[in-house]
Amino acid sequence: MSDSLTRRKLITTGLVAAAGASGLGVAAALASRYGLIPPNHRGIFGPSETLTYAAQRVLIPRHSLAREFNRSEISKVAFVNGKPPQNEAYQRHVAGGFADWRLTVDGLVARPSSFSVADLKRFPGRSQITHQACEEGWSFIAEWIGVPLSTVLNFVGVSPQARYVVYYSFDGFWWDSMDMPDAWHPQTFLAYGMNGGDLPVDHGAPVRMKVARQLGYKSVKYISHITVTDAMKHIGDGQGSPAPAAGYSWYAGI
Amino acid sequence: MAESAYLPGLAIQNSEVLDSSRHSALVRVTHWIHALSFFALVVSGIAILLAHTRFYWGETGGEGAPSLFDLPLPLHRAHVSGWGRSLHFLSAWICVLNGFFYAVSGLVSQHFRKNLLPAKAALSWSSIARAVSDHLHLKRPTEEESLTYNVLQRLAYLAVVFLLFPLIILTGLAMSPAITSAVPTLVIIFGGQQSARTIHFFIANFLVLFLLVHIAMVCLAGFTKRVRAMITGHSAARKEPL
Image: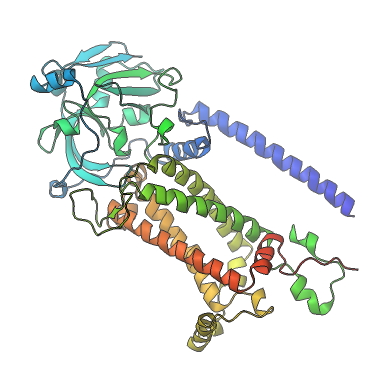
């Protein structure tokens, strides 16, 4: 009796394992097909990074809006992490009021373009009063004024093959990327103003990315270059940004 | 299913109770997966905490803003939160999926109703007072008593499973800007994102406190026997029927 029981158990276990493995295979193929695999899907944290990203992309409405606040809720203190680019070129831009600043947009676009701050301000402007939450634990609420990234993407004509928007700060040290759902999101701004005035140097003058549905580190400051791509493989270490190599998530919707 | 394999075929009437499985295979497997993932959550939670050891109430808070309280840790703004955060999410997924499986199976198999829900009589003040007194006097349970949970254990386990864990998951989700964009109520009910962080921290402390008492009680009740029961299902060393 125990013999047949063992055999039955063995067969059942085998079948369950086979079903599980093929189920995982099908899930992986489907996830890849629908863009649910983040660039940092490898390594020990790959499975949880993928689960978090895929679960949120499936469950959260594409254009759900980050909470907006009243003007009276704007924080009196907006803490700053990090320093402005420590080079002469940036200092010259500060001294010249960013008149010569250029933001270039290239990659998978019909019309690669270069914009001055005045060019960006000529697009219809928008504002949002939203959270800026640092992964460290602190946060503040501020008004961000700028042009939705989608407006600029529509202007340059994004190819249907596009999968990521990569954005670089002036010093080239900080850069990051986001998927198309966040790139087209109405609260993703190229922000040139804050709390009613121009964007201060400490907060990323003249232009910073503002990604309202992700943690603060995705809102890279001093943006001077944007490139649209269909793959992250050949950009940096291929993980979508320098964050994963330092242990942080590429997708910071959290 | 698995525990039936341990049932000695020739159990005598009297020892039947002692020989039958103390913990079902489901409870044993989920218990140890949970133990590992909870340990990883605590370690990684501390790593995240060290990046910012101040706590606030409301929506926002940071350096230069008034805090609710500051932890007197020398490591404030230590930059260890990177791997800490990644490990926190990896272990949180394991903990939540495992916990979900445990909760659903526990409801379906009536584990909660049969083994954890206290009987009406046990909820009387005198009965609770007696259990408290037994605990305060560090009275070791008899072998028979250790086959079931006393009223304090039942209440503590139910509070951990149905109150503290749901709350720590919800306050965790309330800190996500993407999730709260879809479900703003999640963060509003806790009074803001920083309040959610502070509550998350307090519940983590309660859970660690529960764990310390849990381990202390296991030691008091007989470490080897209790741990053996949670691994093999049986508190007594397995005796082959003659």
